[in-house]
Image (cartoon, rainbow, N blue to C red; front, side, top):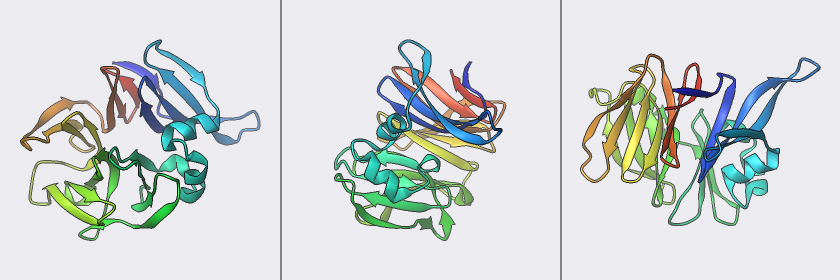
Length: 224
């Protein structure tokens, strides 16, 4: 594994040929601030980017309007629904924002599944997959219908152990499990589930760019 960023990272947003990220830095006056960078997966180089570049990658063309709507934009997950162009933003405390493709708010409210908060986002047509750590489950949620259509796992199941992140690659979901320190892979055509990767520390995020795999572990962000 190759470490790309240390444990000061606070947000990562993948795109076609790399990813942007925010990390904590200390300025000359000793104040902690967020700094923004871009990793080019083709050249394997990192360069500083403006706040606007980070926001454009995260929220798209309407980044100014969307960042004003959600407020503390660094700490939310964000996904664009491929079939509608609508944006979904989700904060760790389960506050979800559903925004149309013009950047106008459709609704915002707390999203819970059976009284447990949901986290993480992976777009799937006009729905999103989220994890429910307290229930050891993941759910497929429709923002337009405000309805959960599918649940995988649950309290009585050993499918997931503390799921904390989810991503979609092709016809597969990858679920990061904090306590078991593994990534589990779900085939969305058959819904078969198997271990994909195991680590020596907690794993919180997984995605691919240009065929390369990247993971956020407790100690930092790595290319596999």
